[in-house]
Each structure stands twice: as structure tokens, then as C-alpha cells.
Length: 391
Ligand SMILES: Nc1ncnc2c1ncn2[C@@H]1O[C@H](COP(=O)(O)OP(=O)(O)OP(=O)(O)O)[C@@H](O)[C@H]1O
Ligand SMILES: [Mg+2]
Image (cartoon, rainbow, N blue to C red; front, side):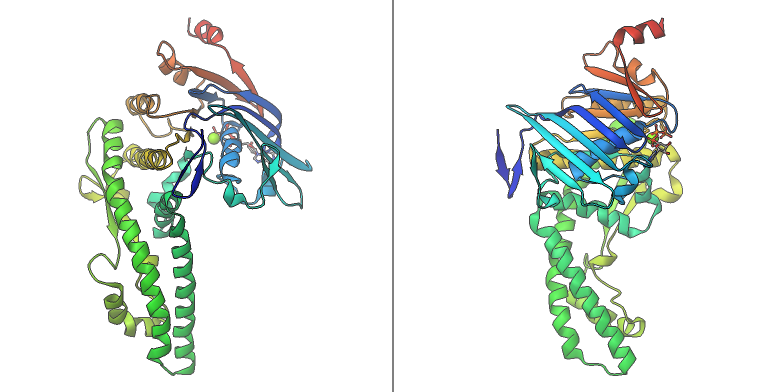
């Protein structure tokens, strides 16, 4: 089954990763794993290679690592290349994805043996959402990481969005250069500034409108997930902060002009947008516990998942890295109930505890596989072994 929505070529919604083969990737020399279409648990001690499996799966969807943007650093130390291959089960056919990198050469990325000319053509075909401890940067870091989060979701359903954003940033750097030039030459020419302002307003207003529409739809979905995870213990909120919320862009530019000239930089616009996170009405970063912050981040990502799923009419693969980190058993259980429900598809979860996750799924209708990871080797733990271990 093939469909096209908003110019995106979509695979069928039932797709899942059936088999993963990796060679010389991070701490793996060679591994081959077969997966359940539902839940896959990866257990093992710190540093054994659980997250590395998730990262290999991330490569197959996004053509890059979730963690390290320097591809060559993901090659096993002292090896000449890495290879990641995935076999996906589609409704009517299998899909083979290949990602290979030789040191000092261009990355090769293939779908069904055909090499992509542009990696961008692949991204989005095999949707995937990763929930990881690194998400905490959304709370701890500056506004850029939060804008990146919004932008990455909107870009998935709106092809023109990134173009508008890129155009905006280009105009912005021209405008900033001109402000600097005015200061250096001690001359000011409003007309040449207005040339940039017109374009800045055009693109900026479009981006603001799209962000604002998106966040309005996103908030109730996010709140629903937070309530499910926390059992309704706290109220959470997201406020979209933008100079353009109350005034038009041209009004705020005029107001900021003398300051912009003094600082030699454009101080207002959508490049300053932010999201304010709250818990019971107070700023999340200052007033939420670690577990509440973690719950907040997971709810954000689950809402992102639901958004992508609805837009693409295709269920993303969900990677959950280290979810026991900071969450109590009750919240992990609630989370597992959510992600094992019919609204979710294939799932990969890591845990340092050998049987804690399996005990949640044993006895339920959920199909699951469990791998024990040790020094870059993955060994399947069968259900018999699990029940023996628990007796
Ligand atoms: N290019 C590489 N070559 C060899 N080993 C690597 C490479 N990159 C990372 N590693 C190793 O991979 C290991 C980390 O694996 P990973 O992050 O998957 O661990 P983990 O099982 O998720 O551990 P934790 O429970 O601490 O999260 C480290 O020992 C690290 O040194
Ligand atoms: Mg890890």
C-alpha cells in the first residue's frame, strides 16, 4: 500500500523492523538481532551496548546517529568501516535499508539496493521517535533547543516550513550585517534596512503563524499524556512565547530599531521564540522534581509521536532509552501501559535491570523479545529462561 499526503511518499502504517545486522558499529564487531513487532527489551549493565543498538536503528531512519554527528566516530575503534542493515516488514513487501561508512569516504545509504542521491529523500519514510536522557536539554538548555523541537515536528508535515525558516535566517543575517555596517561607517540608511525588513516580516510572520497553530493543537495531546503518566497528580502547561504574539512584526521592528542599531543585531523576531514549561503554574525548571521533569519530557515526546503518527498515517517506531532513570515504578508501569496499547507500534526499551521490564509484559497479551547485551554481544533471553530465572 502506498499513499501520498502533503507531498510525502508514505509506506504502509504497519511497518516494523524485523531484523538488524551491524558490523563494526560502536562497540559491536558483529551482531544480528531479530525483533518482535511489538516490544523489544535490551538489558545489560552500563556501557555494554544497549543504547548503541537504539542508535543503529536511529541511523536507519534518520541517516545519522542520535548522539554523535561525526559519522566516523561511530565506526568501531581501529576498524575501516561500519555497516548497518535493517529489514523492515511492510504490509506487502520487505524493505531493506543499508547504511555503510568507510573511513574518509562518503556515507552510503540505500533502500532496496538503490543508493539515495539525497539523504533528505529518505528521512521521514521510516518515522521514529527517540526518548532519551538527552531530552533533558529541552529543559536545561537555552531556547534554541526548544525551537529545534517545534521545528522538527512541523517540518514533518509542512514541506514549506523549513524553506521559510531558512529564508528567514538568511535575511536575518543580512539585516544583522547591515546593522553592523551602519555602526562601523557611522551612517544609517533606513531604506536599505527596509529591503530586509519586508522579507523578514514576510517569512517571520508565516513561521510564527505555523508555530502558533501547531502549539495550540499540540498542548492538549501533551497534557493528556502527562496526566496518564502521572495519574493526574500535577497540572502541566506550555506557553508559546513570541514577540509576535501581541504585535505585528513590523510594529515590533520599529519599536526595537534604536536598540537594534545600538547592539548591531536584530533583537526581535521568531529567532527569539521560546516555550515556557510550567508545573502547577510555576516554571518547570525551578519547581519540578527530577521525576516530574522526566515525566514532562516523556509526555512531550509521546505527544510528538502521536502528532507524527496522525500526520503520516503511519506508526513511528518508538525508542525508549533508560526510562527507569528518575521515574518511580508506578510511572514506569503507567508508561508501559500507554506504549503497549494499540495506539503504539513497535517499541525498543533499554534497562540495566535484567528482568524488571520482562515482568511487566509477562502474562500480558503483548508480544515481546528480550536481549541481554554484554560487551557488544546481544544474546536473546527466551521466555523459558525468564520464567526459570523468576522461580
Ligand atoms: N566508535 C566506538 N568504538 C568502540 N567502542 C565505542 C565506540 N563508540 C562508543 N563505544 C563504546 O560503547 C559503549 C557504550 O555503549 P552504550 O552507550 O550502548 O552503553 P549502554 O549499554 O547503553 O550503557 P548505559 O547503561 O550506561 O546507558 C562504551 O563502552 C563506549 O566506549
Ligand atoms: Mg545507554
